[in-house]
Structures are given as structure tokens and as C-alpha cells.
Image 1 (spheres, rainbow, N blue to C red):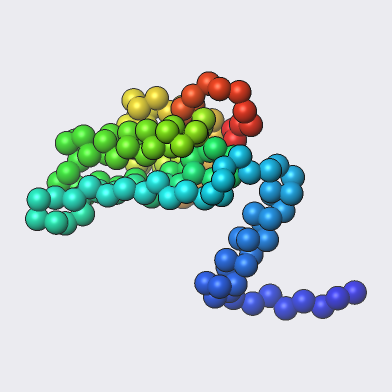
Image 2: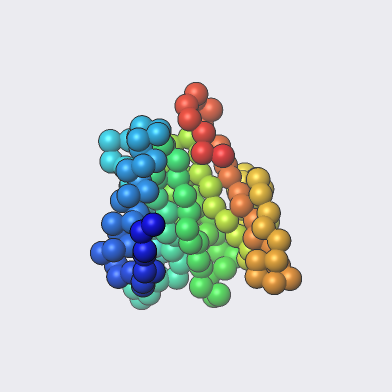
Length: 150
């Protein structure tokens, strides 16, 4: 039997691990995109140049988009910044051929906001964090046939 030691990873090692998983995944389901990962991130900037909101998102391998973070500063909430950032990413993803976009949000964040933008809950993780729920949400961007990420 082989003996292994578990160690912390540095940034380069993390990328090697990610590359290994991506390689395996693509050996099972070929990429539908020429560029495997496409950054869709955007920011909203005030007249003074400060960031008042932003969205971190990307399209990955199979014409699916994932939103990692959507944030709007306290003073900018209710002004349509989040809605505009979300629409920009959805439009760009759709333009690039995405058929599905997904995200997660906590019960103390923005579930209602996303539902008003056409997202639906497809999964709930209870007690994450303790006493709260984490909602996994998706939205179909187009109805063309193709692999689904849901």
C-alpha cells in the first residue's frame, strides 16, 4: 500500500488540481466552447470612480454560466445596480451561447431579488450556516437543445 501525506496547497498547486479535474471532466463530456472559461465579471463605478457594485461570473465548458458573487454597496441598493449588473452578465452569456446560468444565495441575502429576475430554486442546503438556508438557483437563458448543467 502507498503512503501519502496530506499538505497545504499554494496557488500553483491549486491550479494543478483544478486542471486535473477539468481534464477528467472534459474526457467525459467534451467542451462546447472554444475557450473553456470565459470571464463575464463586471463592476459598477460611481462618478467619483469608486466601485459601488460588482458581479463575478464566468461561462464554463458546456455553455453554462455561473455567478459566484453579486454585491452592491449599502448606499447603492434599490437603485437598480444589481439588476443591471445581472442583466449585463446574462446578456453577454446569452450572446456567447449560454443556455443556463446558476448561482447560490443565503436566506439572509437576495433570494427574492433573483426570483424577480426569473431565477428558480432547484436545491436547498439546510443549516448552512447554522440556523440558515443556502438556496441554489438557476435560470434558462435560451431553449435550444444541448447539454444541461442542472
